[in-house]
Length: 57
Image 1: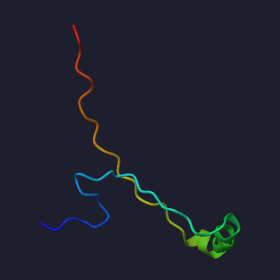
Image 2 (image 1 turned 90 degrees about the horizontal axis):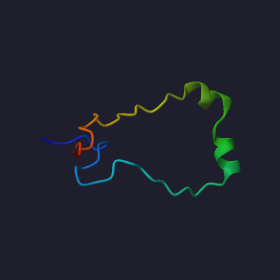
Image 3 (image 1 turned 180 degrees about the vertical axis):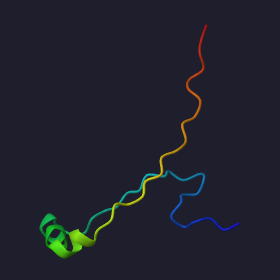
Image 4 (image 1 turned 30 degrees about the vertical axis):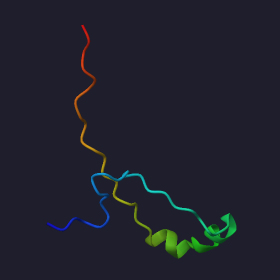
């Protein structure tokens, strides 16, 4: 089965990292009122909670 390209492989870190090439001013210029109005939050999927640490006697 083909996996979703947005999902990390099982051996990859699920946290993304981006090196920005734009200055702060360029980023602020990009986000016009129209773009802000059309923007939608990214869906974040948190991992299922696993078992807690093993209790030690």
